[in-house]
Image (cartoon, rainbow, N blue to C red; front, side, top):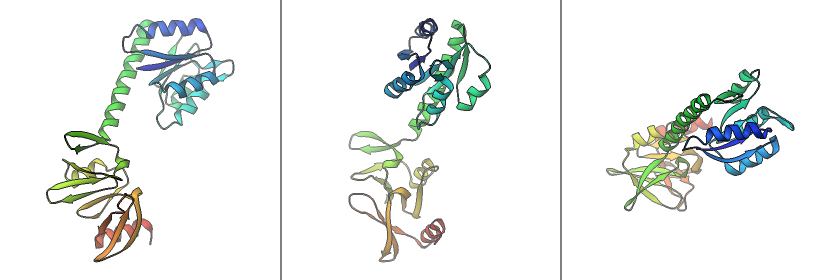
Length: 236
């Protein structure tokens, strides 16, 4: 676990860093003594967690936490401070824990255990979002946004990205369930498309078809019910 320690008082930083280094899986990637340098090193190092003092000469650690909370993938934040009056406010910026000075070995260990659990859960969730596909003798993990569409071809389900086609072990229904919270849609019983990858809708030989944003400008058929749903979604 990579962490950054931010505190304007060198003795407090040194004490906390010493306690953190008692844990073999902790790497102190950087330290900072003010708000501006804190934001710089956090952007540079992209740590898993930040131990953050609240009161600093050029601003408050709370403002650093607010900025981090707006990131797409923010680090976990632990406030490490001498003041307990900010505890309630700390959790409005999704702080994981609130350590009071002077730090104790036991209390720091509790916080590290909490960080480990949260990071493990976070990594598990990230892995579950990946889609496993067969790439010759390899198993490749795709991000859902790479998928242009999936199709059922006989007993196989194939996934099309911009320039490649892969086979998968999911049924089309299982794949749709796995992508359930993402912008995917069944325009036809044999196809599942990424809504963000639809270029246009045009007339086809037997109804309408979707022109997809891959290198082949692939055409995906749309059933009558699929077209009704598209019209409903688009309000047309």
